[in-house]
Length: 145
Image (cartoon, rainbow, N blue to C red; front, top):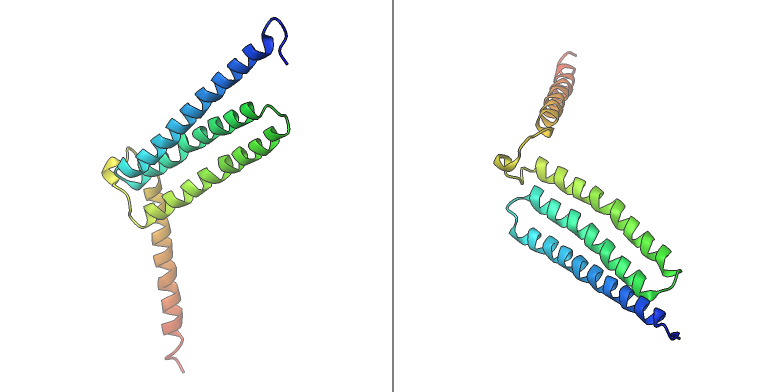
């Protein structure tokens, strides 16, 4: 119920305007993430496009829902949904990035620095050395009887 000063209706207009801005910006960020998935040239840049704007876009859409509902009990639920996304999206992107790097699904000429190359080389050398030791154990012990 509004009083004669129109305070409640003015407050509603501000909340509705803020909700509209959050929804539009959040939807545009999600659209940008989708376009980036289609248009970017390699796995690493697509992975970046899928994670960064998507998480912020989701936050803005959830904030718009919370503002429009105008009840306190919806905020913890929306916060849990956003935190779940905030925790799982980077982990999923990290795993996709590692799998893509190991299977050579990237364009090395587009990388400005490749910090993982030395680690992968050491792991490959260690695996090769271990396989050589295992092979010599199996072949060395069979013909000595």
